[in-house]
Image (tube, rainbow, N blue to C red; front, side, top):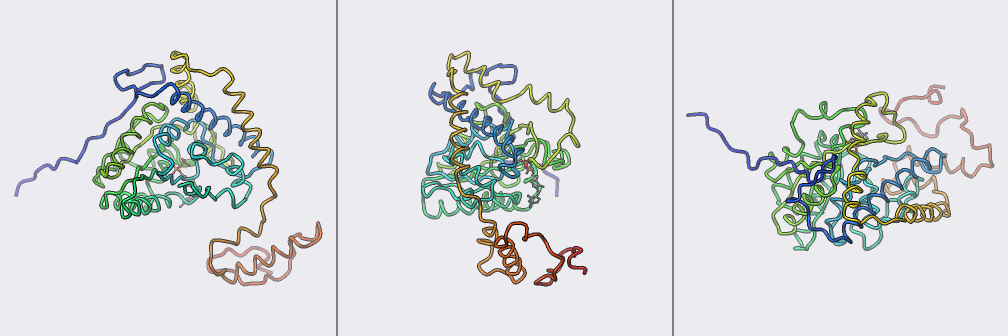
Length: 382
Ligand SMILES: Cc1ncc(C[n+]2csc(CCOP(=O)(O)OP(=O)(O)O)c2C)c(N)n1
């Protein structure tokens, strides 16, 4: 029998509309109203300014570790902008700008990073899932929600976010596989920011693009300039319309860059060069879109001051909240706590109840044996 060629289902397009030199492809320019363009820019600036403020709050010890978004505002806002409130958003841990757009109050977002449960509770009408820390585990959840939408015949789509690193996880492939088989209304939005902590994209995949992985699962994939909000918007709108029309999933790869630290616990100077960062700073999504709006005379003079004021009010509301209850960490993971956690909770409750200074660790015998695989500390060894 001869060898024959099987054509893959679709080639991979790359979309760019407004490049970093300010060149605009007018044939591809989306028809957005002046009001929409201003709303897009405002949301990107809010994402950037809150991110900068959060970094300072973290350095002052007023919030804990978080993952900054600087450089990824166009990927997040260009995509989330295409959704209706009745659609679903399933984020990873770096979607502050998308979440703000979806109506998460600033104080609620901050409270997550201060250990408060509210930070993981969307409003009653909000069709959003909370931040997901385990990489890629949100993707099968997104497909499950999309399957539910299809099963009930609802008019809604799901947009789920993840990074380039997530595409190495089995969860990504399982989610894409079932999304393709079931033809469900889900948009996979990959923010390829070049690094998964210290692992560069070239060590993550040997594929030329992440977008092409969609072909294996039988649905369209597209690569876009993730720092070009117009391109992200155009590709997302197409994908969302397709999903809404019952034409199944799409994978969008936004090629972008994380300009800052992976999280506030990370030091990127250990693994990437200043030259690389500087080159990407030249492609900043905000500068580019600002120049585009300037030409259209759509820049609002006091916008940044208004946004900063909004952030100040949000931080004030956050700081007026009571402190998180440390015992809250024992809730919600297990219906019935395993014995070692019952012991830990009792120990912590005793420490919290002790008068100041008396809650320090003691060399006393532990109240429960270590779990299998748990490392023995000096306390266990006594
Ligand atoms: C299942 C799992 N493995 C490892 C980690 C530790 N971890 C946190 S973020 C991260 C890299 C994620 O990279 P990517 O998916 O590209 O997203 P980015 O942080 O670049 O936005 C890793 C390995 C984790 N949170 N979950």
